[in-house]
Length: 399
Image 1 (cartoon, one colour):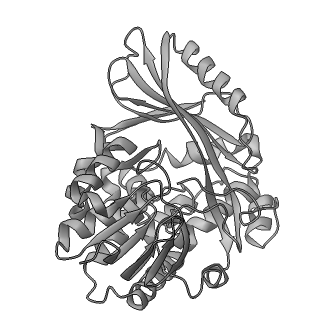
Image 2 (cartoon, rainbow, N blue to C red; image 1 turned 45 degrees about the vertical axis):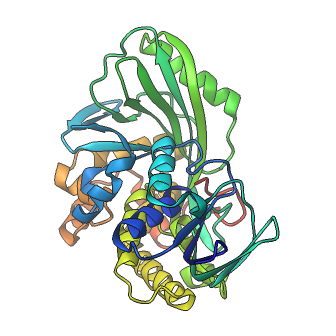
């Protein structure tokens, strides 16, 4: 096959694009797959994490090469409640993703530092003037907003800290909400990679996507000092602004890219509406693609639309919870919603994060005295409550 032709071109070498490439390279070895990424390496500078219960059994071997750390459980902390859960927790890093995709594909099939000028279902025009002719194209590039969607934002800054002495954590702290509540629901997230290397992320469920990096750096430093950690160096830093989807018009959103290639990741709205996590859905969609007989441009576009539309329908319950969080809870009191949630049974929590809540789970989540004012809850469900942010007008996602 000619260097400028392939069976499948994947636009974007971030999490979703990388996982699609790994899945197809492993299960459809007869295909020539190309990954086109504008940055110098795949995945950027990111840490992505997931609960093992989020991932279908067939997907765990696919992720094994990109997992940088695995822990047998995690902890959460709230002002009046702490809990440890036994669900295995894993983290994926950009370095691992970059290495795994390069190992899976021929060197000439990973195009870094390459800008995409135009994409159709069967071709890609690059910034250097080349045109890639493809049997099919999947657009997995990050997006800067989600038109026709409303809700709020999960935004964060994470730093990898090297300490002069052991931090003392044996498992991740997925939520530490004992910190001062600022700019919505605030919590700190900690991943202990080694005894003296820890990733600390300051996270907010906020009404605005604005990030004040100097302020967030100071807050991370303050948190480390409160734990009596002596920081020798900050190895790297990342930031993100993710959409929390509370409402929207999926058909109008999809129509924005009508006539273009198939879509994956956030571009296809394949994210958990409340947690904003995309890794579990990226794995499920990638496995689905490996089962398709028709990988033509039109076939892929139709398959991605059908998959995304079904995901949207199944996310209705989680969008309702997002409306309650942003529309009914006062920003400084949003932590109470999560504290109540973390008093529920562990299997229910696992199914919630996996986007697989059963009808009894949903009843249990909604039963009892709500952690928000009843009047505000009723008003929000009726279309009132606090106004939701327009996710199409702000900076909405960093892949």
